[in-house]
Each structure stands twice: as structure tokens, then as C-alpha cells.
Length: 458
Image (cartoon, rainbow, N blue to C red):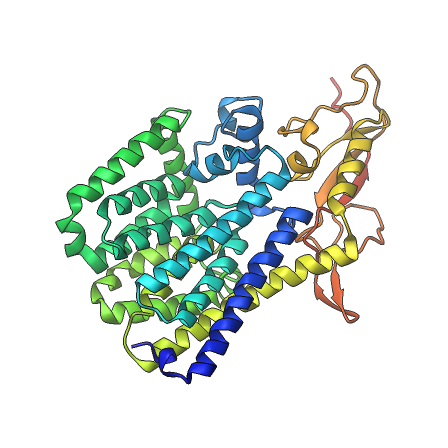
């Protein structure tokens, strides 16, 4: 029973209307900021995956560099997300990537509302879940988990609609998108609905097999290389375990999705109470979650579907507390991102164009040699990329004995990294005279000038 449905009609309708307006507002404002201002600028792992998408789109090579060297190949993760962004047909421009990202969030929100209705959730619960999903996708940005969340709810829809072939197809898509999330989600479904899956295993395996084979034919490199790369990546992450101080940032006071892990634990506990077999997942969730704090994106991908399943539990507390918790985490997370982007636009203007002009001017000058380029240079200055082996556009015959220029991304770096240089450059964001973000979300860079290293004698 959905206790929200027992509320006074006028109050329930007001809440539904208010949440619908909030969801539309978040999606609408977020789309405007993404498409018009290309914010927030990609960083961390997100920019690396987007680089692969751009290289594939612009050069037809699924990798990090158009030079097509063996070490540049994309063989260390599921390839569906970079393939999705790189072959959309919308073009190989920053605006096309951000537009596609906005479309993905809108499509996911609509799919979540459909799944919530099929699952029997109250309208308020469905809207709250959709807001949480949009905030989670905005958090991971261009990482594969944004697409994985959509595919997970596609699989949930197939389960609820009793479409085993569609479920198998969704499983195949998820496998090629985010293998770890695929394994965890599949285990989550198997422990909940093992008998149902077994009865229709033929149809499910058929849909999965066809999808897996078709997508494997699209992958441009030998599958054995991908399996080796995935194994090496898993081994590297396994060796970096150990929850420490970073756990607070990744699992408690997480930027743009605060206290998501508390919601995850509560929802998973409710699911385990209804289906004790799910307790078998606990060691696996620890291994792929808090054990290696920076990999929080894996459990963030599962957060919405775990909450959705928990909402089906009977009881007044569940039907009220989980939608309320979704709203707290989702609204606060989305508000953090939108406010930061809005203040960046208001206080720093079009930093994309400014950085593009700055780098282009320095690249054409014979007075400088370019050292380090910002990670998003393939967006701001595509003529200089995709490459990390930078070759200046200036006269190649000119003798350059001047200074070397290194560029460092401002986002996430409130203090200038330039050694022995005093800088009055400010990158924080203030509201009513008070700093609320240490750095902005734009494309600003620190321009550090240094003397070239002398060649060793002999």
C-alpha cells in the first residue's frame, strides 16, 4: 500500500505537481547549461572516457589518441558508452556530446517514471526516484555509469513487463557498457527472482547471446585483448584497496550527491529483510565499493534500482521515508551542481572561449614551447588533439629557446600549481560575499611559465 495515496487529494496533488515542476526544472535548467555553456567541464575519469568518444568520432579510432599506437587502444573497460557518444551522428563537437548527455538524462527520467508506475509506486515515489536518478547521472557525467543506469532501468522494465527477450538484450548491453555493474546487478536480480529467470532462461539467454555477439562484432580490437585489459584493470584496482580518509569524501559527504551511501545501506537492508538471500551480496558489495573508495561510481549505479526495489516493501515508514530520502539526496545533489554551474557562468563568463583563444595564441607563437596541456584540450582546441604528444603549430623550423608553458585545469584545484609564481587569479565561487565553492566548474586554466630543462651533457 502506498500511504501517500491515502493523503488528502488536494495535498497529494500539490506534492505531485511540485515534484513534477522540480524534475522538469532540473532537467530543463541542466539541459540549458549543458548545451549552451558546456558545463560542467569534464574532469577526472569522465574526461578520459569523453576523450575516447571524441577520438572515435573524429578519427574513427576507439582509443585515447589518433596516432593509433597499441597503447592507445581502448581495451580496459566496456566500450558501449564511448561508442554511444562517438557514433551518435550528432557531430564531433563539444555541444553534440553535451546534448547527447542531456538527452540521456531526460530519457532515463521518463523510463524511471514508467518503471515506477509498473512497479506500483505512488506518483510521488516515482518522481522522487527520477530526481535521484538525474542527480546520480549528473554526478558521473560522461563515465559509462550514466548509460549503465539507463540500461539497468531498461532491464527492470523488461522484468516487470514479463519480456524475457528484452531483459536478455538489456543484460547484453549492460555487459558491454559496465562489466562490474552488470555482474552486480545480475546477481541482485538472480537472488531476488531466481525461479522466474530459470523458467524463462531460454528466452533470456537468446536475447543476451544475440546482443553480445552483435556488439562483439562492433568492437574493433581482438576480444582477447579486451579480456586481458579488463583483467589488468581489475588487478590494479584490487591492489589499491583499503578504506581510509577518502571514504568520508566518497561515501558520506560526497559532493553533488551527499549521503547517498546511507540511503543505499538503508534500501539494501530493507531488500535483505524481504529476500535474505541478498545477504550473500554483502562481501561482493564491500569488495567493489568501500574497499576501494574512488570506485564509488559502481554502487552509485546500483543505488536507484536498489531504492526502487526497497520501495515495494510494505509498511508506512518505507513508503514515506524512502521517497523523502530520495528527495533529500537528489534535490541537494542537483542543486549543488546547478548552483555551481550558474555561479560559474555569472562570475567567469565564457571560459571555454577564453581558454581556447589563450592556448591557440600560445601554440602559434615562436616564443614559447608548450609543455602540459589541460585534459579537456580536445574540446577547446581540437586542432591540437587528440594527442598527448603535442606538436606546436608554430613554425617548425624556428628555434625555441624561450620559456615552456604548462596548463593546469582550474576545476578541483583552488590553489595555483605554478612554482615560484605569485598569482592573483581567483577561481572560487561566492554568494552574498561568502565563498561556497573553492573552485568553479568552467574551463579556466592556470598558465604556468617555466624555464626549459637543460639537456644532459655528453
